[in-house]
Length: 196
Image (cartoon, rainbow, N blue to C red; front, side, top):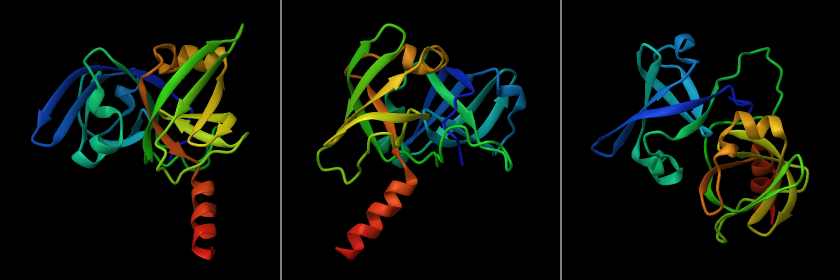
């Protein structure tokens, strides 16, 4: 389980395709604290550390992960939001994040608002997922509060600290992002659908 509070930006240093798997090597200040078989969220995707060498480590994304996330679009030199799994007893500063991306969405606009940024996103019209105003959503692993909620669209407001310490500083309109919708909302929606 994760909280959506980003610990570091990892730099992609190598990408190696092996059959349908993609081995992703990253450089991060977290590397010395990692161990083999540890779960780390990469842009909100829970992946297992499979190798560590000096200040770099490697994770593997399988076909299923590549089909449902934006990791297949990575390039060497890209930055990724990183968060290690939550320790039992830690504060939950964000919200409950599973690290299981629901779908890929698209950034449609970024508006600077004299000290903050309002960012709009859209996702597939056939999606069963929904957001609510003041509810939680995870974008590339970052726990955020929904400002405006529409049909298959929503916006979030980004404060300077979040902008400067996550990949939002590199985000551009028309880029794809990983979306994980609030797990409690998903359970409520499933219960409602089963009763209707």
